[in-house]
Length: 612
Ligand code: M6R
Image (cartoon, rainbow, N blue to C red; front, top):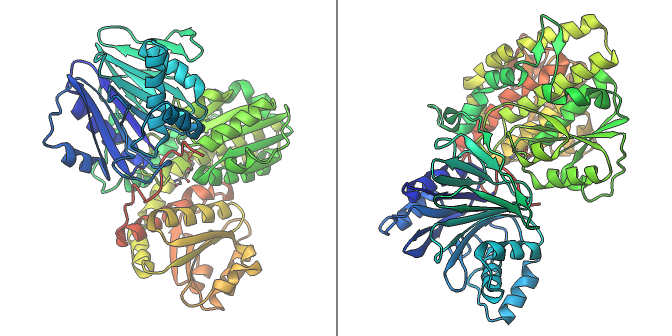
């Protein structure tokens, strides 16, 4: 969703801002803009890509040592250059960039119109900047105070940065419900929606908390308070991010790089947590809560999209291994359906970005009801990581491709570790079996590496099916969430309609779709109720459907029936999703490439969905 970058310091601001916007492109956007202060306040903005903005501003005077920049993902008003940020205030003395939604913007706008304000755009953001200006003029207060008063009048979410022509050494930033991080350099400040634009300049960062207002003035220390006017001590943290992980490293797309990173990202998720030889599994961040989880009446997993699919795998794992009842909920449904939550429940929120608005709202609701809240997040320091009681990072490294790949396998890895630890505490499986599982888990990164060798095979399948309009993905047991995930990957990056289903449910409806033109992907490794899946494949073949099957290496039964097979190494049923998902990620990738789609930034999608 929207991306924010701002700079104040001794360097040229424009190149830093543009590079920062490029780093944030992965979040998804439809227009981009920049405001620079050099004598006067100049705003340049346009619909399209950051490169379009660069072309648009090419012949302008871009010298400045203070500026703000933005990529917009349209919410209020269509994606065009007028609605793009930054927005001027009516006097053109202030310029603002904003991420989030001001929910009461219509009421505020009406009041401002009555006071003589005119609006150029359809955005809620232009309402906010004029509200700030109106307060500053009428209440005769400093800009910082006007921002604080204005933010007390708005409902909704915001991460915003403001520039003022009258005060060219000042940046004001604030956040509520949308992420914001400030990088502290030598006599300079960087502000961004996440740490990716800052990492090459500084490792000292402050993550703003809810309702924080940060005042950054040239030559001075940062000054922090909240919108209730309480002074706060800035908590400066060391940023742990590897700049190389933000580059494509020789791959054509981030998604492909991230698919290939999985042997190491899974290893990183297990590092220091799994000691197979010594028979130790421990999740550092959860140690203090292990007993609480192990004796919870119920675990509720809340998440969205791919993270929800990982949650489903988690349900199977925890029930199977630790015998604790688990429910998996779409965060967006959970938050609005008056769920029954008690203090004896443990809620686990799963999120790659740690910023998903619906997941945050589900957490807030569960917190209100007294449940213990744990998080499984990838982005260190993200909002979800900070609002949960405890949690475990997935350590997959930055995921830039909008389609989640390595984050999914890392989430599943953490859930496997958690289920194993709970099983140990509750003594729900024999120690010898538990040790067997530990050893097999230890071998998984190598097996993922092997599963990745299906490149050419999958490419051929993609070539055969690239022009179809529909796909069905079927699996049972642990392979059902994999089928859902495979279908999601295909639809989001190749724009082919795909549905995931539990294979046995096919008879209850989807079988009507099967004919010679319908490709059906069966996630059919030789685990669990394999024989039943074989019967389902026969049902599809009997109706002339085209079968693409993901099978365990050496499988002869399915090979005879299927039109195409892709092999994965043999493993325990509980870990099979870590392998079976690999060819499906690749299938989606190749289909999208062959169809000429933008793999890393698919249309309409955002990497972190910070609005509901
Ligand atoms: O950052 P989160 O894991 O909370 O994001 C949840 C979904 O928005 C995300 O998984 C989405 O479905 C991805 N585009 C899937 O590839």
